[in-house]
Length: 287
Ligand code: PDD
Image (cartoon, rainbow, N blue to C red):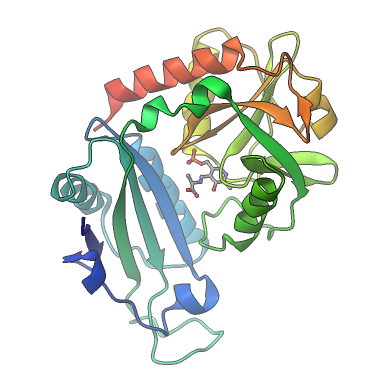
């Protein structure tokens, strides 16, 4: 089926949406993005994603081409026009297309490029992997130093994902100075044998996950103990449980790290409970 996508104010069939070869996103990865999930035709944590988008844009001194109110309308239109029940909405904004390649930013009047498209994922919340868990490998974190900005520079995460696939695993956790930063496209957590949820504290070293914020809030509300601090791969391998969070995976258990089973090597109760709470609360709050 041909999707209807959004490009610079117009709704178009996907094969008619064209972007210039001089677009800064194409030439310099000079763009930011967001991925928002759709459950039952409604948007999950739209406000969180819209706020982070504004922050990413302002950190890069990029113009905001659309108000949050209009952005919500575009998201809803795309859900409706593409008949999405469960899936994802991808949004990308770049610094636009000047008339030539130049490292310096283009003139202020250059309009940003804004693109949104849907990804249909029937049964997104019932992913079979949530029952089996995923396996991860560790790789060195070789990304740039502003991982708090959600830029489209995703080559290194893509290489990490491929290294995992080659090793027969599902994803990679990135390690810097001996401690885990995050997964290739998700935040990383362990649960200690005492039942404490541990995840790296917010800084420029990781993306400030929208799912992370919600999951930690729900965990604290459920009287679970949370510690925001770095952890090593060895500590993770010795933990009771491990899991990841993201807008597309929600809460996903990790059962093996670098070939070593975590805990019993099976999906654990805390990750399972957090996934249930997250999905339940988000179903209620979706807009
Ligand atoms: N990735 N860390 C990184 C490096 C990410 O790319 C993502 C999201 C997250 C989780 O953030 P959130 O909970 O807001 O989705 C953490 C998206 C899903 C992607 O690139 O497809």
